[in-house]
Length: 139
Image (tube, rainbow, N blue to C red):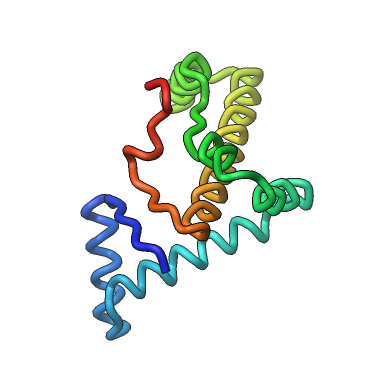
């Protein structure tokens, strides 16, 4: 098992703590169990080609996995997505913008899944994953 520390919102921690108390189980165990279930549900829901893409990552070199783990969506794309999300929240998103936002969100989700799988593989290969290690080499 790998040790990895994450920060979660206080409200989420409180819910996990309450659930752990109700189940008479350690909070770490409850969080791990729910995280594993959430990740499994996500992978099962993926189309076959995406599952195959994630499985193929296992054959990549450590350097390539680190590159994937550090990958970020382009700043211009992030700015555009945020602008569309703001318009959506304000109720002023047009149909074409809604379609664009859906596509950007899907791209972001695929990127996140690739990054998570790359990090899991790296941890399985004995690497420690922490925020400093995930910073881009040039930044």
